[in-house]
Amino acid sequence: MRVVIVGAGQAGAALAAKLRALGHQDEIVMLGDEPAPPYQRPPLSKAYLLGDMDEDRLWLRAPEFWTENRVEMRLGQPVTSIDPTRKIVTVGGKDLSYDHLALTTGSTPRRLPAAIGGELGGVYTVRTLADVDAMRDAFQPGRRVIIVGGGYIGLEAAAVASKLGLEVTVLEMAPRILQRVASPQTSDHVRKLHQSHGVTILEATGLDRLLGETHVTAARLKDGRELPADFVIVGVGITPNSQLGEAAGLAIDNGIATDEFGRTSDPSIWSAGDCASFPWKGGRIRLESVGNAIDQAEAVAANILGAGQPYQARPWFWSDQFDLKLQIAGLNTGYDQVVTRKGEGDATSFWYYRGTDLLAVDSMNDPRAYMVGKRLIEMGKSPAPEVIVSEPDLKALLKG
Image (cartoon, rainbow, N blue to C red; front, side, top):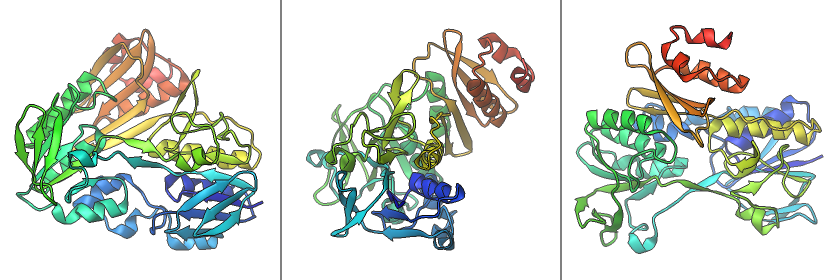
């Protein structure tokens, strides 16, 4: 039984490794459009960009792991089509047959339209090793960088640029940074952190266009102001790479739609990671996180081998900015109340509720709050908000 994995990122690597760990002895072929072997993406916008991590430390596995586990890697070879009827993918102009196909194709950063200067030189996105390598030389002390988008990727890049001595401005079109993903309390906390390090944050500020003939020189804002820039980083979200699946006739719903087992609308094709949406609490979600990519891919590997076990997502995320370690457990969608718990020193956590139900926790340099909050959410326990604020020993809540 040959398993072909399209996508050599975090999910694809986890799926291949899990297949072998579960005893699959037949062929595994992993196809990647990048020339690099599977690597970690989160450090790209942090330690790698800062120069604190060498490229070989990004690798998810040592090169010999793939050889020893008989995973055939074909890198720098994008798949151009899938024929579900014949069970064939086309890669490098040649056909490759499969018994089971797993799509772990990830996602692509949204770019600014060419009409407003998105294709000028010096305009970058942060997603791949090549993206970061292309921009590293621009990070020189005293240079001016404008970051379009006040989400986690943009803010992480802002923190690195500030640490390296650049003049940093963040443009956010929404009324506040992190508006789509976090509470006003979390936004306030992060904003104050950045401002304390000299980062300029302009909220409710739209970009009209980028200026320059061949290379960006400035940004014109909707209010007419012009801000000089030596380069620009765009962090305005990502889109799932579902094109191959869509062209093959698979069901698409905010990504490649799967059932609770990770199977697509074609029984021989599976999907996991950023590109896949799946059932969740009566609806359907798509999670963009390392944790989900690994857990979902491992669940798919088991189900390819016949486990028949639904994937139970346990959402968690993190972000490193300056000296802030932000850890997030759960999903805050639909919250109507946020309570604040002060920890030791500068530790703080924000707890999201819908009615009496605990949904999520944002912990700021407070790993204990994160750990307890994650466990409570997974156990289905919802201590009263006033208990969260007043309980001296959070761990005691796990026993109640």
